[in-house]
Image (tube, rainbow, N blue to C red; front, top):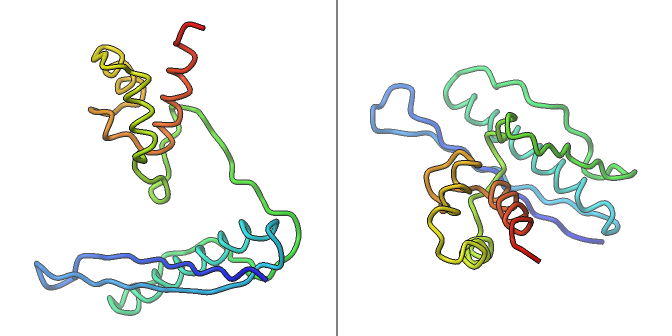
Amino acid sequence: MISINVAAAKKLPHPVEQYGSIQATVSLQGEAGNLGEVAAVVRDLFAAAQAGVDQHLADQTGAAAPPSRPITSPQATGPARQPPRSTSPSRPAPRRGIPPISDAQRRLLDRLLDGDPQRADEVCQRAGVATVGALNMKQASEAIDWLKTQVPA
């Protein structure tokens, strides 16, 4: 068995106090029988944790909980679903989930850019950001792939 722990947290402005906030954190634990089930279990646990946070915040503020997507059982078996992959620049990134550029990506981009500010500006323009440091992981990955195609063999 593989033990998996996930957590979700959210912080909202307080509905009455100007400088106050309300926050909630939910931690869940689940198990996967084999490596093939890990992705599905993590995804389902995280979705359940997010829904729990939303419900807890709704209870605290007296608001209705926002509708959440259906959650399957963390113990469900079957093939893991692959998330949709879109490289379309016209499709915005999801609100949650895409972390900022990693240190390793930043170092690789610095090497590929080789100090050329024009190429750095082009990468930023293609991604729609002001600086290379403002890229998220997905944008950085796309920039790395693009720069690798630009390097003469």
